[in-house]
Image (cartoon, rainbow over all chains, first blue to last red; front, top):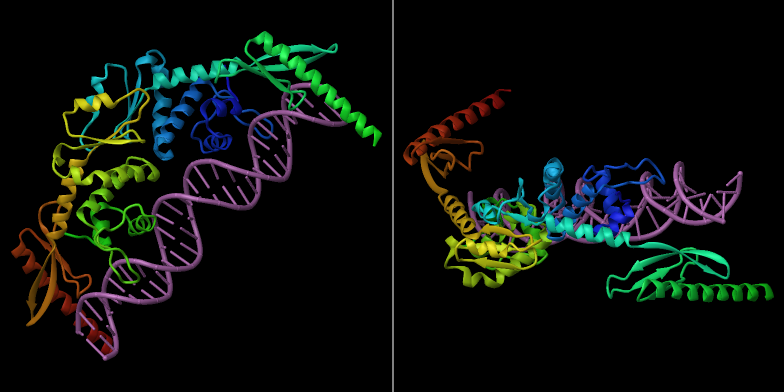
Length: 210
Length: 210
DNA sequence: TATTCTAATTACATGAATGTATTTATTAAC
DNA sequence: GTTAATAAATACATTCATGTAATTAGAATA
């Protein structure tokens, strides 16, 4: 499964500008399909997504971009070997070199040399978190409702806050609703569309009259 | 014992511009005497020096200045308590909060929470290192040698690389020498001064003749 | 096929941190 | 007491990483 920049931005929390800049400066590039001019699409793999999320995580912790570049380079090289033991995995760096721990936590101790600065972050957790974000994004399901004999495409979003749903009708900007179950939410958007259409017709009539 | 900006720069490796900027932005200010116009002198205490060195160490490891500011703020508050157990001390931060460990290394393990980024650096080592740098700086002793009946001030520097000394005569720019013992080095600079004077006189004679 | 949407591209602006060079007032030296 | 050395102050330039807004060509849709 692949991701365009917008999805990457939503999942990782990076800005579109950052994603663009990082690609252009050869930091993290979309490995599925590169940008090729106006209107083309950058497509990132899940592995790319992990790299981007690790970079973001390190940034949030105050690590400078220059150091992160080196860390990500290591990750790029060793990503193929890593795939298996994700849950126990730890991604370690002293700012110069980065190493990955799959053993028990005691192994970390040995790395705490004098005056060394050690970054430790659980890659496994990051990956699990990403999986969650991705599936949440996927849960945005498209439905079709019929109002006055006409079909309308609607998009159903799970409301991660309180467990319900909110729904929108892209062809009628501003037309949205919400509900607790999928069925209820679909009924709600039907009503919303009806109301929306009525308002539009009223406006049209007013314009003609004037 | 206090330090002016030049000394601070030499000891910590920070540039004069950085020291100046950090003072102006209220990051690390000289606690002994503040700047008060042209030609005034910033004087830093040894405690200031530790803060500056910690900041530099974190910077070299790729931590952003903004995060370091927060780390140093913690250090400022807790410095009084810290003074005693320097050798065992570790200065820890996960980028948000900073804590200091004086117990055995096992305590560090507990702090390695999931997804947490942990910086560990040995404050004791940094302090010891600073003490060394400071005493090395102090070892720069001033002597006086007599050449052809005239007295010349000379400065003796311990050569930290190979244990010997190197010596210079500030009033004769470019006139320097070296030796293994202090006595030998002082003899060497006498010869160097003699040679230097001869060359200067020769130049003067040539200029007159032309 | 024409129009609209989309996402990259381009251009410009910003802010933090720092380098560099010049100026200036104080301190030290003669 | 005059001059020279010193270190802060000032001014300007630069780089990196980003924000923002306008432009543009390709893709999707009517």
